[in-house]
Image 1 (tube, one colour):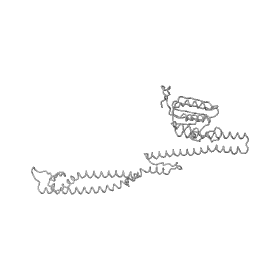
Image 2 (cartoon, one colour):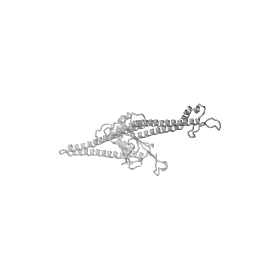
Image 3 (spheres, helix red, strand yellow):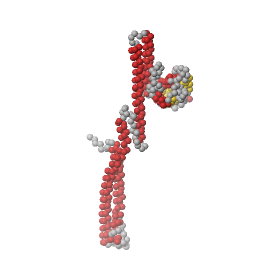
Amino acid sequence: MTVTVFPRTERGRLTAVYGSLLLLAGGGLVALVYVLLGQGLYASVSGVVSTVSPALRAGERVDVDPGRSAEPARTRAPGEQPSPEQLKSYALTRNLSDAVTEATQHRLLVVSLIALAVFAVLSIWLAWWMAGRVLRPVAVITGTARRLSGENLDERIALDAPPGELKQLADTFDAMLGRMEHLVSAQRRFAANAAHELRTPLAVQRAAAEIGLAGDPSPERVATIRAKLIGVADSSEHLIESLLLLAVSEEGLESTERVDLAALAAAELAACPQPGLTVERTLAPLTVTGDRTLLGHLVRNLLTNAVRHNRAGGRLALTTSAEGELTVSNTGPVIEPADVPRLLEPFRRRAERQHTAGEGAGLGLSIVASIARAHGAELTARANPAPDGGLTVRGRFPAVQVRPDSRRQGGVQPR
């Protein structure tokens, strides 16, 4: 069995690292002081002791070097030998200096080791406390993440700390929670709205079959109920196709090709009914890379939405630019700017649904937004001011520029 000695928690690891570094620094400091003091201690002690020796009282100078012989150096005549009393005094001085030096070094070592032990305990405690302070935001983030579920995504860390890496981490986590809450709410709302939209035509079909065909209905009544059922079935089929298209666009693009978006927009505009509307078209050359079918749905949904929510004698404008922009603008009811972002969500309408003929399911602009995301396009929508009203939707695509020398060969160059 393998025994792990190293701490298993980040706080324990930080404590071990900080404590080891502090102990290493303290031990190095003690060793340095001991070595440096030991090198000059003997000379200092010898000088002090020699000042009270009998030899110096007679005016003699003693110069003792621990690395040399104990024979003293003094000022005397050439060839003069020290007397026995002088040698005895020098030996006594040397022995006394050695004893004092050894005792001082021993005392210094004992005191230093005791101080280092106290310093070790204090440093480990400080390292443990400091590691806890540093890692407190991480503990808060971990606790919040453990408490999170689909029911309390509105909870935030809201870390109260000075600016730094951990503060940035907590703020990033809060931003991620906000996006998750928005996505989960949108998913729940989408599921509820889809169930409601699919349940309504089923209820109408059931009521028509049970009530309209009860008893012995006349041929005229049967024809009316038949037309009603066919209309409801067509509406349900359109809704299901829209949901499938939305799902496909959310999955991304499986294959791409170069698409002349200006020509595609012109074809969709020609196929779109424009009853009593003034149409303005400015179609500059625009080539993009993407799925032709999905791009056709994008333009078709924009035009259908612009026609459906227009007013009698209103205006519809379709524009493409070489900068990669596709713009559809229409007149119509005045829309509050705060309500515009909601119109890009599934099953969101400016007004409550009346379940009348030709009324959409509220998926048109959400499909447009999904297809634009799949193509890397930036989609923006803004409400037109009164009195014209209506909506302007602009998609900015990563355009593909056609080089002049390659037009005949169909070559293109990404912008």
